[in-house]
Image 1 (cartoon, one colour):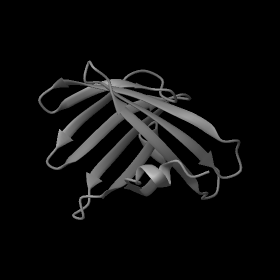
Image 2 (spheres, one colour):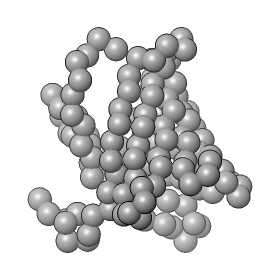
Image 3 (cartoon, helix red, strand yellow):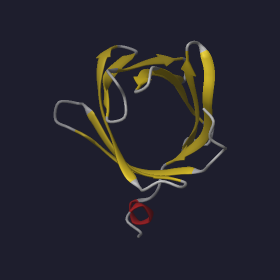
Length: 126
């Protein structure tokens, strides 16, 4: 809450298992911190609903498709509640991510990002 704005970059690789569940592993570089890995496991639980886990979450991840976008809701350690929207862009190759983190109902952090699909070759570059 008292930190200045900083850059976060992640590169992820996802696979769909034989059970239809998505496993996404992200390599995260948070400015001023050691790189770390974030792991998501997501499965569809209804026509427009998904659930799963994320390594940094304190409890389950709930995802709902709303129109063309997806609303993620989850809790983080320290009593923080997160809501993230992932909305596809018109180009069909990228999306916008808007994350809001709240504590006691007050916004304590916000993040806006662009999510892009990299080619296989680009994602393997050092």
